[in-house]
Image (cartoon, rainbow, N blue to C red):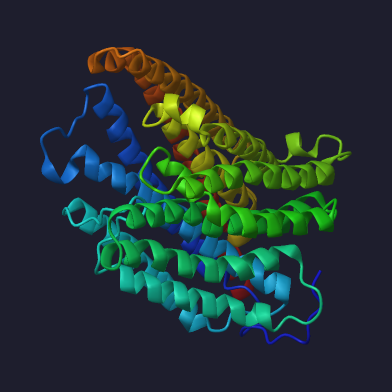
Length: 466
């Protein structure tokens, strides 16, 4: 753990801006609802039951981009920003550089996310996967990421002595994210074209996951898991192996999205090797967390937040193992452009990082509101509906992708692959509805918990007045 000098707390002796953390998490849940709505519309479109068919602004292609951008920049980014405001001051014993800057960043980021959604719906998306933000949004987003880096690096860099591994991940992720966003949103648009642009886009797609989402997600797990288990991580050495392995191998994996293209083969082979190496890096992280929980007498089963965390870790091992196979030239011949890839993307973004975020929210909201959850049973329903729906969707789309690949490889007519996919897409719809039901349960539980906190605050104010 870090050793620090005397900290300068916020007014009232606080280190954390708890109200801002609460706002970030609420905003994240709002964007998650939008993303789930977009996913539902896409699922209905695939089985020819789109209720908004023929409306240009609600066309499937645009709502597909809303679906992905709302999860990445709305749900995940807002969640991480709120959670960094909770974790970084506690790890450094220093507040962020500026409270006013924190509130400004919150407002500016909502402008970025809403402006991106508006631009996409209006038809002004960039032709970069995961970088569809309209060109007039990119400078604002880039400045916002710079301000985020300054605001959080200030307390981290003032820390004296050895730092806890979470701060390693945070300190690296902030400049990585700033550089990755600029690389993917400016260079393909203004400086590169053709094969070079395609190669850079591949790097951007995976660096966004590997240098933004992954280090922040891992860093938060290294912070919250020991707190809930009330024990240190099993191996600090493995923590550092995971960090340096991520830093060395993950930036090189992105070109595996463009195998069998004119991109030079040495780059494609390098991406394949790096992708396989990432699985070994992830395995060291999983071993560390398994070693940490070992011997705790089933604490993971009793604690809902820990269950979210460890479910996400198991699914992370699965998704990286899957990626190590699917990034090979042999597997790409079968599964490229199929629903196998869709299953993989959903598992990593929702089944891993989304589950970690929901677990942290389950832990944080009672502490932010000052009361226990309205219903622990609803927390259980939230977990089981979400986890069950996610696992069914993953398995369903994985098998759909295999059958689609076999259909194309056997040179069947295109309609044959569509017909055999429809039963899988129906199952996907109901799995998605289970996930949506889980989030509705969570929202209702949060609302009732907020009501309970308001009653408690009113009673306390009345007691103080008397």
